[in-house]
Length: 139
Image (cartoon, rainbow, N blue to C red; front, side, top):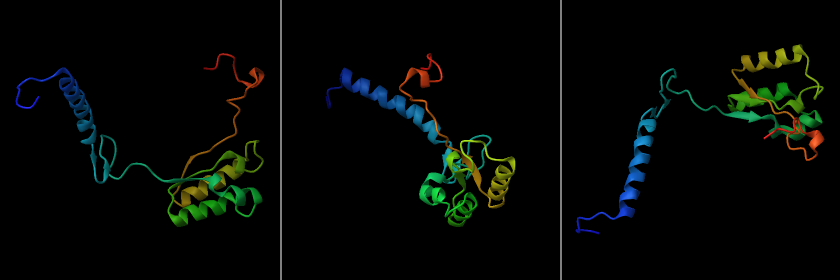
């Protein structure tokens, strides 16, 4: 192909694919700087934040040698920006914890400058028996 002045079909198709990727990737990449995404509505430095899942402390939380409050203290001390509490470590699970407990956890997290990124809960979405599923029409 070199020097022949002709372009074969395979080379032409490959060139179109690369040009297509470049035309999509470059504008997207242009919105980012070393300090983070600077898209409209965001400040430099906004982006992903590191959060700890409570399951990381499964044994001490189950044994009662660590409390949710103690886990929040630890997370703040080592620099996590949030926690995923995981519902089955909350008192009385699967019953909903008291409003007072929820308020105290939220207040402590706030005072420590941490977010609550979510909570995991037990589910039976993959039950084998049809009677265990939420609906027969589940996709």
